[in-house]
Figure 1 (cartoon, rainbow, N blue to C red):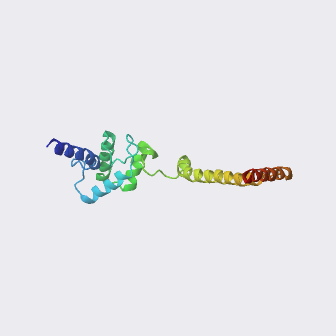
Figure 2 (figure 1 turned 90 degrees about the horizontal axis):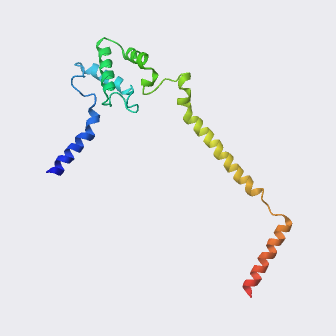
Figure 3 (figure 1 turned 135 degrees about the vertical axis):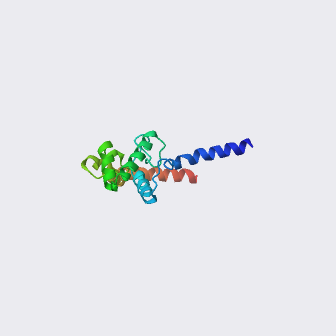
Length: 159
């Protein structure tokens, strides 16, 4: 009995964060407006959690932002106007996908730059490895000495 109760409590603890925005007091009466609110909420970052949208977060600030989004929708704002209002208050960081502006160029271009620089370094290392092997040829004296050593070793083995 205790094991079953523990399993149910564990299951509820794991499922709980998925229902962050399903609080009936937050939801709009009109299904289309609620769908808009949910879609907008999925595109706004929780400023407390930072890796979750406000739709997924249980933080108090996420609750406030979800309420703000629904208030703006009730006021008749379009999706763009809701985003503009929230960005004006909290900055571009609140967007899950920040815009491509001079302030975010490094954010957007860094993965490509890392690949290009890493590929260039790998290519340079491979070229140096190839030329390093070719540049270490034996001189004629060294080849003769090596041959003498090899002949002496085979003579020792045959005796």
